[in-house]
Image (tube, rainbow, N blue to C red; front, side, top):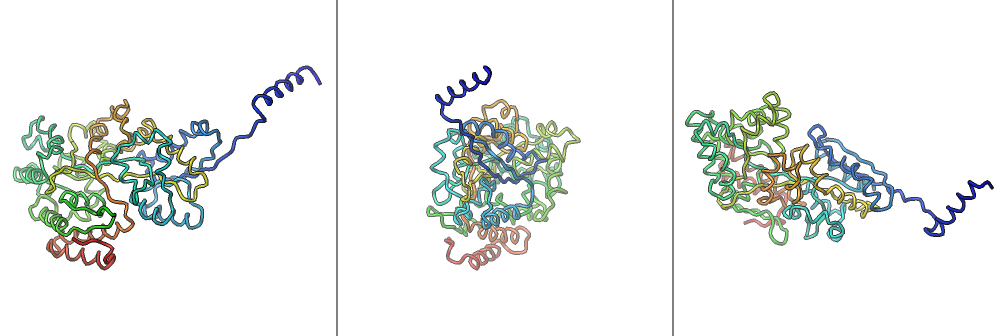
Length: 448
């Protein structure tokens, strides 16, 4: 044996004597499934895991074999794929979906509660407290927020100036709404004033969404309605719903809202008109709309540089309940009950629950950050829309994670369509919606 190999042998024997026999690192496969509009900046929902892969490997002393599955298929198909994959014992370790799926998937045993794992990771202490309420089913936490949003009222600064509002009046509007000084009724009065003054055309005072969705719950909450009681039972508050239907029926009757708002095309009519800032005075939408407006609808006018001086956003103003509010529909990381390495899955989720990681997604996709400390990070502070809208999370509420919520919401929507289109009176619309819910749910709902 030559001298060189003798030295190598001696060193090797020394290392073994000190540290023991070297062991190959364990390789752990982890599959993560996300839905994302990559062109809209949502690719970080899955891509962030690749960014933290080496960090988690070092922390855990393992080698990760990550499989990231990400596309933008229809939500219904996406969710069905997870259910079918679970039935075939082929579910991903981590699934991203809307928080409303927690109820059905937890009840079916497709995902696991993670409440007892949160304390192991300090990152989760930074999550905005209100968001944890949307992660619960029957008192246990089943998910970690991936992003957040607010559903504000956008208002045209351009048209308010034409109506004679001062810059001070315009700039103070969000705070006056938050304080309850400027209510929903005040907003409709301003819209009517703008129509009467010829600043806008009839029907362009206030626009809402044209299809079913969580946004409509804000009217119900604003009228003092509740969807579940303390025991988690669904509640159908007829008095609050009737007020909602009466309000919505009045919008086209007074001319503040177009009579064809229900079913109005978003891409062809709604978004171009609202983003232009010179046609619609008030419009109820989502904070994420801003990003698509800047990139798609007013890019030729300067994009963000055009929107900032001409469009503002405020909370949904107070109705009879007397409180301004918004609604947040967080997307959520959940751990499949089929995952063979749930602790590794949790370590990965914790690693992307940081200001740096979440900023990448929030800023690129115009979603609100999920962390308290994000408002102090330079990247987030330098985005005037997100940083100025972050306070809305303090006023937010959400839909409950009840497996039967779709039946409740579909019945509510039937009445909305009937009342606002004038097909039925508000009372008839309420009777129609109540009958549908009773036919489908029977006594599983508390009727008030």
